[in-house]
Image (cartoon, rainbow, N blue to C red; front, side, top):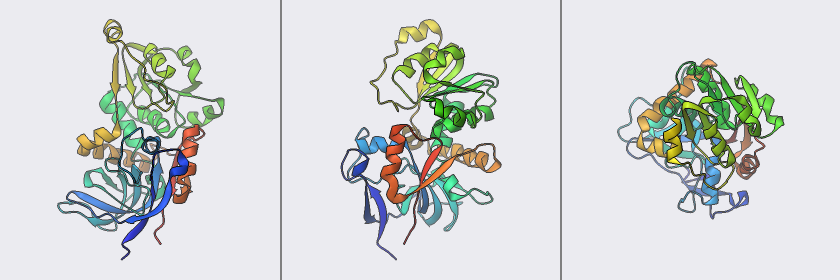
Length: 324
């Protein structure tokens, strides 16, 4: 058995060019964990934050918050899973998905048995699709018939939020995009309407607004809320300075602002996160949830990062990993 494996590492913080294909030790599962032979790893904005040093991680660091593959080994105390089983896994707590083998908590693994999901599609579900259900169900608490606005509707998580809102019974579901070229793509993900972000004020008022863009979009999102509306903050893709929201304004207008961070939630509530992952896998397997996937090779991780940072991506990028 090989002692080392291929992995993409962050040896120092910087731009996409710092990413390096390296040889690192193969990790083994601890108590309550499984190790997975990775077939595909999802590429996400979160991994860019690790690479840039926005999130303080020890170097060298193997990024990768989600993956799909087959279980390699079970740690002590793990039940209900088996070696060789195809799974989708959220690896966000310890990261490490950009590698031939990754470990994660068994609670954050969803079996793919009995589904027709390809592993490349399954690798796109653990982060974005799980987040979509958690944000709308647990945080925003969308009620049947309510209206929902989602910024960055053509992106990885945006493409899932609109569909999850529909699944949860939302009435009017509207998306915003940053350029006209993305309007048709966003519409294909089930939105009733798609508008340019700067034109969102013309779309009316909403019970729920989900913002992962930040900057001016965050301030305008608050203005778009109807009375008793909820703004969920879950990213800052624009890289803009933080936007202050006066508490007195919330008091006087009966509005709520909440935050959601998948890594923190998964670490604190792994079982709840796992249930949302199982829900996402089931929705994708049934056709209720559609994922648009494009595959690049593992050694093209830097290209994936550049494309995500440029805002040119629609749907989801995954990295194909092959053991040699």
